[in-house]
Length: 194
Image 1 (tube, rainbow, N blue to C red):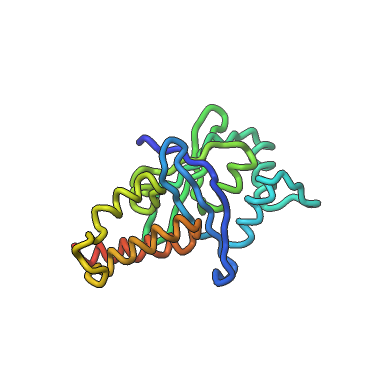
Image 2 (cartoon, rainbow, N blue to C red; image 1 turned 135 degrees about the vertical axis):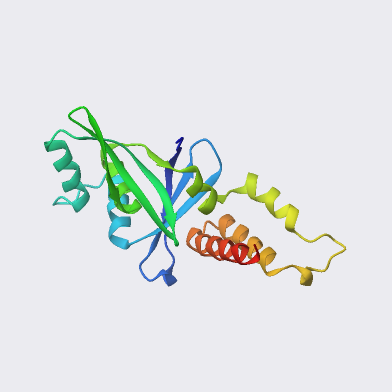
């Protein structure tokens, strides 16, 4: 399977998030964004490494990196390969003694390790298609086809169209947590209509 390489665009939170953060991944050769809700500890682990801040004692992800290094295993990449019931799943792929292996992981832990070992991050096309949020280039054309014309009053917009407009506004405001929630609601609504 051909995976799509992504890069970390950022981490965001809002006061109403209850301690959750949105890890935002972006296509390297495209314009879609993939927000993944993660915990505060994992967000801190990723942020510290991105900012090259060395804590006084090793964090859990540092320990994992050091253990893999001590036994001679090399992390080749990580893959976010599944989205099931709103939960993302990932694999840490590695090479050890000439053999390839993989470990199941939460995407947040896999990304925290990837930034420590400078491993590329990939997403399966199916996950990006289902949960990816298009940025301006793609989303404008998608919204244009569903927006109202001058002859149609705004009141006649469907619930789905209103949610798609809210999604676009959340993306423009870089409120990826809100965008992720709207994306999931839109997917659910589209599933009910089919």
